[in-house]
Image (cartoon, rainbow, N blue to C red; front, side, top):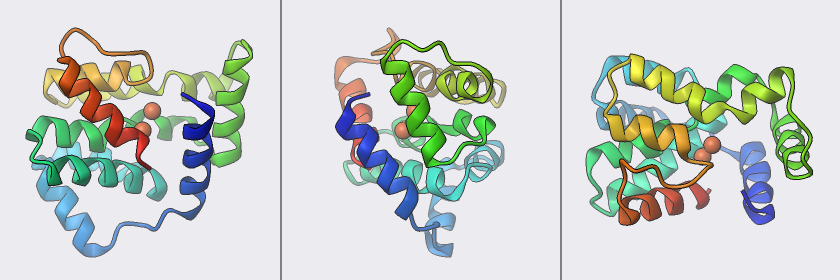
Length: 158
Ligand SMILES: [Fe+2]
Ligand SMILES: [Fe+2]
């Protein structure tokens, strides 16, 4: 994650509007599955906003449904760290200088694999699981370059 992305996430976490009723209904229908919807709505409001904005941007570009859902669900693991924007930004910055994360920071750092495990247990598409697990590391073999680039762009937009 680059400094610009960290700064954008810091401010958008602080200013994110909760989903409206219409957006929540749209999110439910895009996910099309009760278990995936439950995981999506278990997120803090700001993470729901981030996922919904990424997913609806992909949907507007006529991307396949698994990609829309991957955009919506990739950060579900973050909620287990129970961190606000200061804790999140501090954890990311400490990671850059090589500090080994502990406690809630290690949960936050591992939010990709943690979320992927939950999605796998919920029967999500294997590509959603792979993207979620690796979205901070680089393209996993399950995704093409084009799919990876679209998802990465969606994640960085907000
Ligand atoms: Fe993430
Ligand atoms: Fe994200």
